[in-house]
Image (cartoon, rainbow, N blue to C red):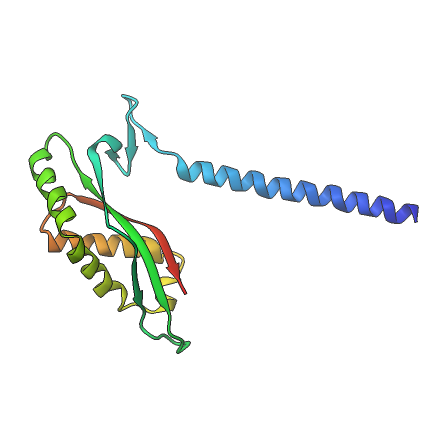
Length: 163
């Protein structure tokens, strides 16, 4: 009986140590992913552009659509919500102000572009590891072409649910 108690205590201690290590590594990873670059002047940067030079344009409400039927032959849908980052610096102020106003007035067109693109994907395609990043980049490129600008800095998908 005494031997069983010692084994139970040893297992509990080992389990706590393993859980602690996993949590510690997880926190390190989360912190490293959240770090932003700081330049010599102390300005925060995101992907090489100061956060002060980006303006977000949100799309009202999530976008939902059916996906193409894939290998599993089961119907799937996707729901996503996104925002568009526009470069809004002193050098581009006039052009970016016009673009931001245009994007805000053309949210229906933006949703249509996103829908037309996403509905051509299968569940298997959008569930790949790098699918969200690829979707963001491909949607950004489509919007840059549609609005004839390179001031669209990024598209951020912040809600991404596929069922």
